[in-house]
Length: 125
Image (cartoon, rainbow, N blue to C red; front, side):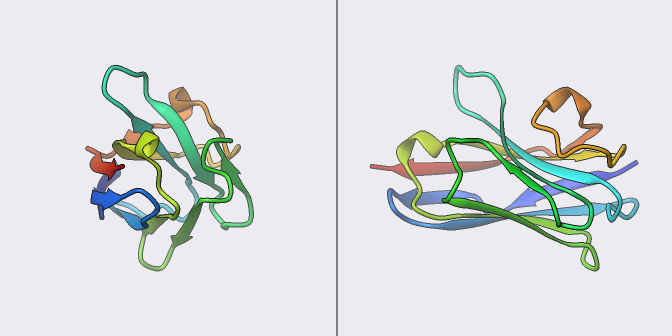
C-alpha cells in the first residue's frame, strides 16, 4: 500500500505562485506514474499533470501548460507541482495520485490506484 500526503496549498492572489508537494510512504514510488488532479466545487475531478517514473515524460492539461510544472525526487519519494501565474479558475482541491502500472503518463483518473486526501488551493482575484 502507498500512502500519499499533499501539502503546500493555501490562499494566493491571482498571478502568484505555489508549490505543492506529495510525500509518499509505505513503499517506494520510483516505478510509479505520478499525477496531479484537481476538483473545484460542483465540478468533476480533472487531470492536471502526470510524470513518468524517470521524469523523462510529462503530460499536462491544456489549461495549465506553460504555467504548471510537475517534477519528482525519487530519492525523497516525493512529487511536486510548481504553479505560477495562478488564476482564480485554478481554485480547487488538488490531489496527488499514483499509478502502479508505470506504463502510460495517463490523464485518466481511473488508472490511478492510490490517492491522497487533497490540499486546497484558493486563488483570489
